[in-house]
Length: 72
Image 1 (cartoon, one colour):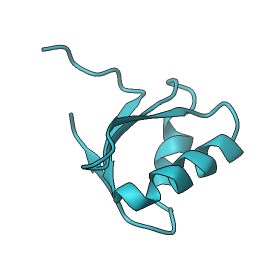
Image 2: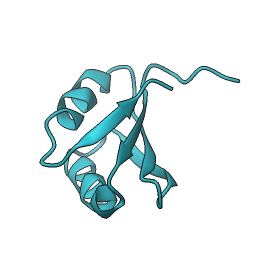
Image 3: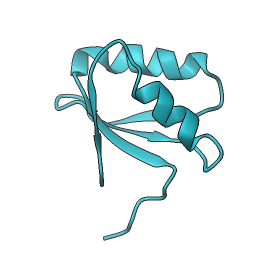
């Protein structure tokens, strides 16, 4: 099993909010890219860079809906 890079953020979100999360991240241009791993369960990953990690975490912790950041 490989260890994820420190700039990869695994999360769980209500499937109804995946599109909204994607649009929020797109609005910040070039901070990170959202990929859905399992849309039915709401499993997703945000891939950024070491330079954008702190900004991504700030955004994810202040969304208008709840998410759970996984320590994968």
